[in-house]
Image (cartoon, rainbow, N blue to C red; front, top):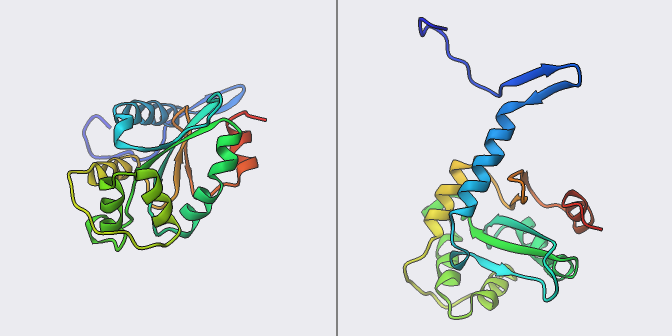
Length: 176
C-alpha cells in the first residue's frame, strides 16, 4: 500500500472473460530469453544437428546428475529431430559440489564434447584448471530460479525443471 505497511510477493494475474493471464510469467520468460541470449555460445557446450536446426534448448546441467545423464543419453534422438542442445554448467551446490571440479575439467578440455560425454558416463577425467564460465552459469541459474538439474530453457524462455522424454520435449517444441 501507499504507506508501505504491506508487501506483495507473488505473481500478478489479469482477469478477463477468457480467464486468468499470468502477467509475471510473461515478464519472467522475456527476461530469461534476454539473459540466455547474452551468454556467448563459445561458453556453452553445444550439440547441433547435422541437418537443419528446428529448435534450440538451453540446458543447465550437472555432470553427476542421474536425470542429466538420462537426458544426455537422448542426445542422438534430439539431434535427429532437429533439436540443438546448448549445455550450461550448473554444479548443484556451487564450488562445494563434488561435480564442480569435474565441470571445470570438462570446460578446460581440448575436446569439450568428448570430455562432457565421458563425464556424463561417469568416467574420470584428468584434472584441469583454466578460466571458465562455470560459476557465471551457476549464478545465472540461481538468478533464473533454477534449483535442480536438468533445467531446460525453451526458445520462448519457459523453464522446464527436470528430465523430459524426447517425445514430450519435441511436442513442447512443436516438432513432429
